[in-house]
Length: 487
Image (tube, rainbow, N blue to C red; front, top):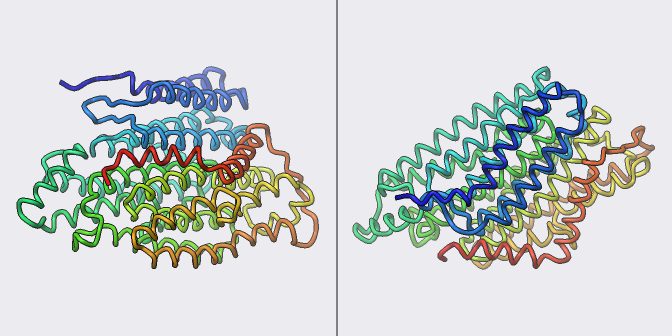
């Protein structure tokens, strides 16, 4: 009989219930209060973090739900991204979505619950359900400015691409089930090994399954060539949702890739298993993401589109650690994603506040900001430098670790390409800094963010500096996540 250990899912149950409370509360007060709903949402996320610390370790529902180190690590990232997205949205909540605040915050919480279940999935169907609970609220959130054509277009594009990628993913999962007779990831791994030992080879069904699953997850990660939706969706969606998409949704895709490929299909990751080698396919996709993301970002004049292409390049760097398929590789992926939380949520936090105050999303609009709002400009500078990988910020350590993992695994060509593309990225990151500090004239805008947005920016800056200089606490946690894999 299954072991229904409901104690393990208390954090998810609480957050799901809290989302309903938030929606009902906003309706109950007739949407009159502009900030209480947001503060209650942030409070609920903080309480969920405490519950996650208390109820961690173990499994439930016969290994369908795992509360291991990998799940806990990524749940911290999901909760942090949701907290920072909500914190940076107070201005739009008081103006653009004042009649739908409860639904806005509730949908963010529902999506976060889906991510948390996905991170704990020990078998493929529960992983797929978690992925769907993650993405369906995001379809609505991307189109939340229903009077804005770009937002509606963003939601529609994201919905169509998301539905298409989900269909591809579930078809790949069904092929794996047909070959192994199970959806449990550990049992699947054992059965595939036995099939290979018995027959000496596995037919084209496994190749097709791996291609379809990689394509399905590649859409979620915005890996090239599955990236076509990202720039338009990132530009059209509300900026806090763009930030949430760029970090939390990508982290969900990363943990899904780790569960399926690095855990379940680890035996087929190296060139020894040609033509079943998914490692070289992932490496080629990573290279394409780095090249296209960085080159396309050079031409952007809109800050959100520039950060969209930047996020495509960043997932390319992260995949270098993924294809290493080693303890240092998994640890580097975890650390990279953790640091990316602070850098990208912080950068989009600046873009959110600036866009709300000025109505301007152009990079040139930031001209002279260092004189009128020096602290605001300094925050953006730190976020740009970390994304570029400049020491002593956390982004430098993150890139160093994924490249070290790539070299150790023999992907030297991919690391060299990553270093070259990192140099290219300096141009468009430094361009934002140049505009803020060296463009002629003084900005007409003096930016004074509300307290929650200031808190978000402070968390981002402090996290990048602190964990860049003292990375060991997060690295030790990241190495704990790698110990669940049998390398």
